[in-house]
Image (tube, rainbow, N blue to C red; front, side, top):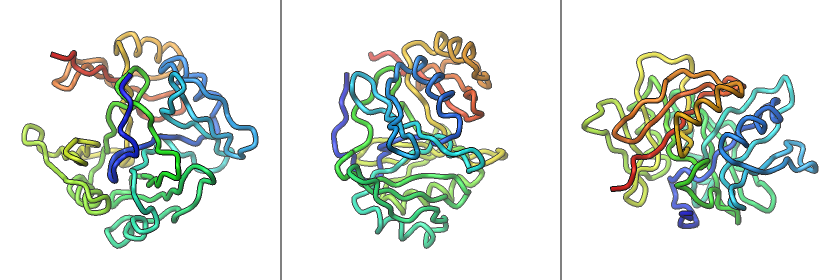
Length: 253
């Protein structure tokens, strides 16, 4: 089971969570699908439930009271000094939603939106680093921004995070954010979308089987499973209306 190199370097996607009123529905859907486990903390008003695989943290599912804006799957980028990075969000064309705030005993975070309005988080480990491993069923395989503001967003994240931005020559209109020599996230230019947003790709052992299980438990299939140069993938809307992807990487060798 591949463990990550911790702490995550600045600019890497280091955590993923969601806060919605339908917390119980989310847990009932994602836990069997992705082999997660983790109960809400009753002393926490957000009832935040860290999801685990074999005792390793892989995601968070929290509670947002009815009537409050739901927070769909949100990725957090690792930063060394969250306040210093968050202070540059508006200077670079984004908007600050939550300035630096402590999550007592685990870290410090901020929330913002990029020039296209897509929501993202920043995370400073203190001491919780975020993802504790990757590369198995149920872990985040890729994180991708779907936006009508591709170039502006790529420039924004590159400058904000100190990441290297590369446009893929074989896919014009697709940029990757590289940190420590590795691609960490993607930015997809589209002509039209209801709202610019980040979407997670969850790794699964068998995309077709996982799609069947997801649809049987309330998901809607929007992109049937298909083979790509990056593995077999499918797109779904989960039971709360949030877009996700399922992916099986290409076989090694």
